[in-house]
Image (cartoon, rainbow, N blue to C red):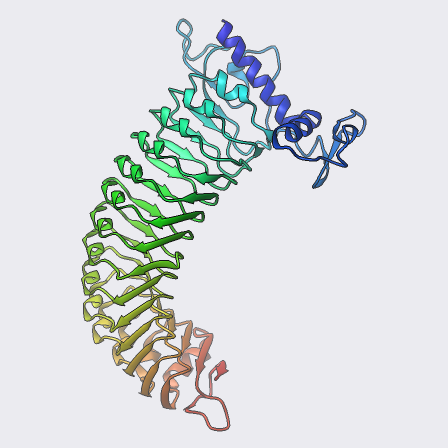
Length: 467
């Protein structure tokens, strides 16, 4: 009974501290060290007359921070009937018990909670299995007391304003399946103790300010399916231990400051479908051929890095690949003939590299391709007539290359084509009438070529822009 009373007390503190203007103002000032209003005690107080307090963002009224749902909160009814509260089955009355009992789930997602999450929540709800406070305006730090939640399975604190570091005590929670802390202002290093969460299935930490290296212990999370570390400030090499994540399906490391080379151990993630390692300008070296060992890979994003060397011909084995983004690197060599085997590929981005040679004739077999972006390279030769067989093609970016000769009439067979950019090449002659008809039929809406008067390389009656 005493424990259940503590639960009721803790939830009462939660309600006052996140919905009452007076308390919200005071706790923010005391725990965050903020100067609220003009800095005087009087300016921080809720006076009960205009239902508002003043902070650095202006006047905040009680209506602004009112919970969206608060059914039965602070009423005489048992806390098991309060909105968002689910209790453990009562040992005598089962799940129908409507009094006070151990909280199993606290779900107040997107409920307009403001201010500091009180320490009492961490200390009192020792038997909680799921804590979902995502999509609110909560601030402060994640208490070290989180390590005392031995039964915790799901922790959802995403889309708030939490600050500070992720406490090392998180490693004491041995049962979490989901850890969602994305879209906050968390910082500091990722504690190595995260490797102790061996039951973890989903870890979402993106859109924060985490720093330092990704700990090697991350490789101990054998059941992890999704790991989102993108849009942080992680540095250093991607740990080789990441290859031990044998259950991994979705791995996102994009938009960090990672460096070194891509570990060949990535080729051991045989269950992976989505791999984002783009926008890490310090990552260099070659694309590992071992990535061709990923039979389920659907999306591969490696753009805006500093990768060099040739395109791996072995990628032609990635039969499940749908999106391949390799643009804005320093890749060299030719486009492999073997890539024509990518029958399910819908988007291929190779722009902004140093590729040379022709577009392979084998591309005619890429019948699912809708976007082909290969601009700003050193590609050369004639535009292959086989491009006309890529019947689903909608966007074709081939500008700023060294293509020559005339534009093939077969491009006019691409009845879904919405855009063609061919300027900045050595193409000559007349824009085929078959292509202009696509403009006349309002299918093609963006056509650029080297047709600038008075001395155009390409004569074009239907181009939307001439260079």
